[in-house]
Length: 191
Image (cartoon, rainbow, N blue to C red; front, side, top):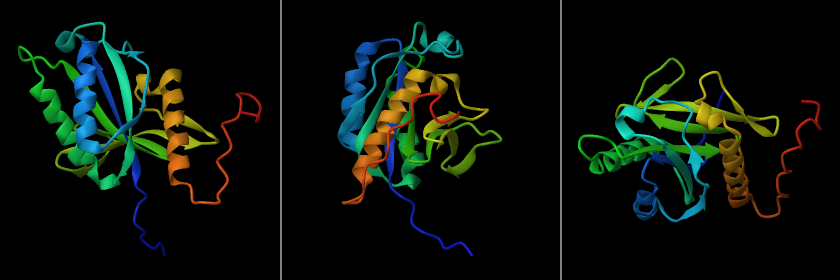
């Protein structure tokens, strides 16, 4: 019989893409006020894996990821997605979004995004929000799934999420526990 346990707190990660990079500082400050200090920020990443958003948001688009110091309870993901949806709406100009904000969380074994769109692999949470299992961590690295968005499968994104995972494991390590071994160099462990 499985015995229910409280889930571990998760590392909140929020991705944003926009054409006007100048609005990032304002967004980051607002998110910092809502969810606590940001402790890791990615470099700017090109968001050029799809043209889906071009008609609404223009081009070129740029992505930046932020990870927060305080951990969140996993069940807060729908609430956070609804709050970031409101932030997007408040910044519309001439009926068009200026920013797309994607919250998610990271645990040692997975990275999950929140979405308002149902699909076969997504699990309903509440408030019209679903959990999208985006990446799994196995064999000492993040691995994509058949439905992983191409931008989340990109080496720069995997590198960022690996750094965030390392920080999370350091933050949650019990005193006296040795740190996790670093990921292996590609090809050294027979993969």
